[in-house]
Image (tube, rainbow, N blue to C red):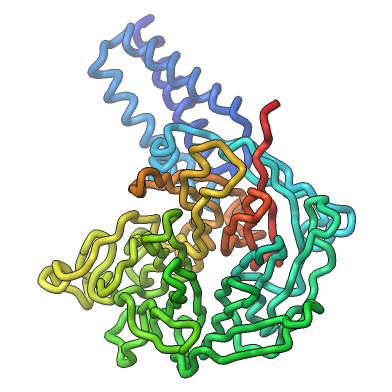
Amino acid sequence: MKKKLLLALGSLLLLSGWFSAFFLTSLSQYSNLYILAPTLLLGAGMGLMHKTVGAKLTALTLAFTALAAILTMNQLFPNHGVSISAFKQRMRDGGQMGHSVPIITQDSDRNGIFASERSLEAFADVEVHLFARLPGPVRMMSFDSTGNLYVTIPQLGAVYQLKDVDHDGYAEQPVLFHVGMDRPHGLVWKNRKLYVAETSQLLELQDTDEDNQVDQVRIILDGLPDDGGHWTRSLALGKDGFLYLSIGSRCNACEEDDPMRATVLKVDPVTGKSSIFARGLRNSVGLSFSPDGKNLWGSDNGRDQLGDDLPPDEINQISAGNNYGWPNCYGKQIPDPQLGSSNICQKTVASIVDLPAHSAPLGITFGEHLNAPEEYRNSLYVAFHGSWNRSMPTGYKLIRIPYKNHQMSTAGKDFLRGWLVNGKAWGRPVAPVVGLDGNLYVSDDRAEAIYRISWKQKE
């Protein structure tokens, strides 16, 4: 009788431990202390079981109680997205748990989405400030040589300029730098010129009289595909002086008629001459050169309609003349079930990093100029805009992928999350960029905001 009671107690402790562990995966905010409960419950249960019935039966009971906990959680909390994959992701992060950080706002910004206090879950010792509110969904960003920040708002056809004149960490009133464009998206600053990628054109903007208003507009490249499908055009500037322009596919999965679709172009900003640099990239919204300027990296959004977990989104090292597979292949040269074959895929280039399907990785940036510990400087930051067609939402966070000695890790680590709460997103991060002050800035097109992320300096 005593053995049966001990067996029952051990099983109950294991079940409770697993239940509390999986419950943590459904919470958007929690303290590091929360992990103590499942740790103590599982440890006590395993110890009691091992003492009562031995190692083999303990292992078997451990597995069965884990399965029972998952099934129970999915029945009790179907909207929380508790799953084995979520728990596995937590384990891939080394069991690391973040801590809640409030978004620090000015009194004037405490309205709308920020009328009540918002917080995020950070995996570094950082502070998060609401740097600016914008009059529309902000997308890509670029700093000039004096620290002014330029942002695109495609829905308004506008580029805004943001300044922090008093150096208090918050932008003053946004200034309309230029308007009347066709869905401006990607932008880079170089030598007093702002290059802006519209859907159908690539522009060069100048403010020659320094009144914070554009007075010279030059069309560098015209006739970009504008017949539907992915409309965003993103930019990166190489040390070779050329602009690199991404053009997404027109369709979800098909053989394109227009050779410019699903490519990255190499453009001479002086002459406007362009050529296809790489192809087979369905929608590479994020482009960034490595710290040494030698390698172009890009995020790529995979196709839809293959279920919740396929295909993976990707991080690719984009080199001249390469084909990265779309629409025939995805990820590690895996044939698309409708359009691919192993013969075709052998001739394509595999992804470097596979990301969770439908995470929608958009902007990317390297952290070498961050005022942060070395591990954070040696990272690629990727904004997950978040899923729209998945049964359980995923994404809505900022991750970092370790990058050291010119080598990219094959897995990312959560850096900042919490824009998704109980299955509903109050914000959607778009693009990270490093400021001249060594802080990380992140745009959010749902909250129409820009955040400033700074590392706490040790005394």
